[in-house]
Length: 152
Image 1 (cartoon, rainbow, N blue to C red):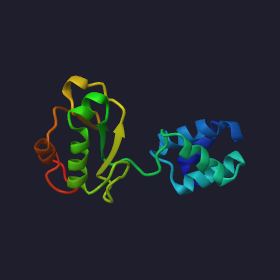
Image 2 (cartoon, rainbow, N blue to C red; image 1 turned 120 degrees about the vertical axis):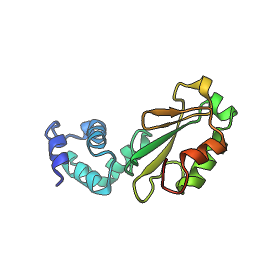
Image 3 (spheres, helix red, strand yellow; image 1 turned 180 degrees about the vertical axis):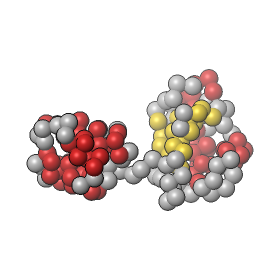
């Protein structure tokens, strides 16, 4: 068993009612919920693996793939949507070769849609890790992501 999981499990009693906090802590520690970690969680909590998957897939907060080195959060709030977020998403997907919710094979980029990043006056915008990229156009996206899998 992964040492990170041993550390996480030491914080809990291994009861079914702890499933959500265990999943949260594993994801915060490891970065995502892998097949192996879900199996270990099932064993630890004394529940079927299907129960762990059922809980984890029910909540949008859980990830089943690792985040990329550069994690892109595309704002899909009203202001961003009206000002072209769908087109920006299409451009990012074309440049990086990944779709929303995916991570590139080299683990350099991942992308997810978020409800709002709180920068409505800068719409359409994205966050790349902690940096907001504002007033995006297809041309600005091209400059941000010059070629597949590479960033400036």
